[in-house]
Amino acid sequence: MARTAFVTGGTRGIGRAIAERLKADGFRVAVGYAGNEEAAKACADEVGAVVVKGNVGNFDDCVRAVKEVEDKIGPIEVLVNNAGITRDAMLHKMTPQQWNEVIYVNLASIFNMSRQVIEGMRERGYGRIINVSSVNGQKGQMGQTNYSAAKAGVIGFTKALAQETANKGITVNAVAPGYIDTEMMSGIPQTVLDKIVGSIPVGRLGRAEEIAACVAFLAREDAAFITGSTVTANGGQYMLG
Ligand code: CAA
Image (cartoon, rainbow, N blue to C red; front, top):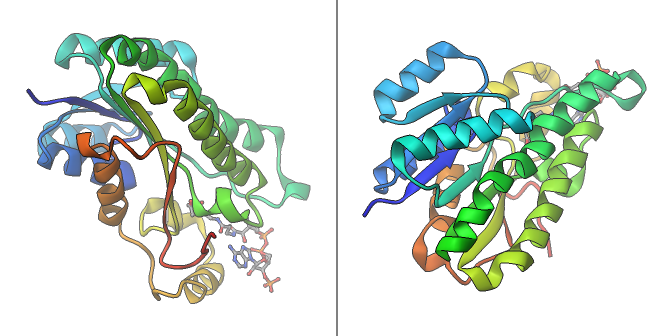
């Protein structure tokens, strides 16, 4: 029987590509979104995903969203924590609001969502949790103390939860994308973007589908021996030992 997957931030950008790929791989797919109704409708119509609205930075929203999805299409067996935002500024200009929004949406969300599904996964003895981190959580990025801290935190969370669940049939992994051609890039000044692309050995931005392929691999049943790992997909921009 088809397994159920939930992708947060799944109506646009990398999340939408993940939703499409998991659907093509035979999953029943639900996606979460924060507020863009047009993208949500398009995702429901074009991908055939169940869409639920909510703020992943808010615990109670996650309780409600997961219940809604599970009532409609069954227990979540694959959770992709993808939702993320940027609020870039040098630290000397960063406001508490810019810091807090990024920490809640990009990091607290991983707890808020995983907490909803972990008991069921443990009971059923099966699960896949895939957390979307970032190259900037691995290497740090000027203008992103908030984002880099949150995305590094995602990797720490992944390793800790992987240890808690390794003997329960549940794998927990991270994917760390580099710079991917999505709306998130639109806020970067062109001169800065040119510098960034110049630092990518592959010579271009990544494609959302290339990240979706990594997620789809980790979501497979036969990826059972991979846990606590970080799959790095950044065009060679940052190479880890
Ligand atoms: N790479 C290289 N150089 C960068 C840089 C970057 N990512 N970001 C800023 N710089 C450089 C600028 O080119 C500039 O250099 P010069 O002084 O030599 O001209 C210097 O740093 C200061 O930058 P600004 O003049 O733009 O300063 P500002 O205070 O107006 O803005 C900023 C600072 C908000 C950080 C802005 O530069 C910016 O948005 N930078 C992009 C930051 C970035 O990489 N964000 C990633 C977004 S995508 C993402 O997060 C997804 C992911 O997971 C990869």
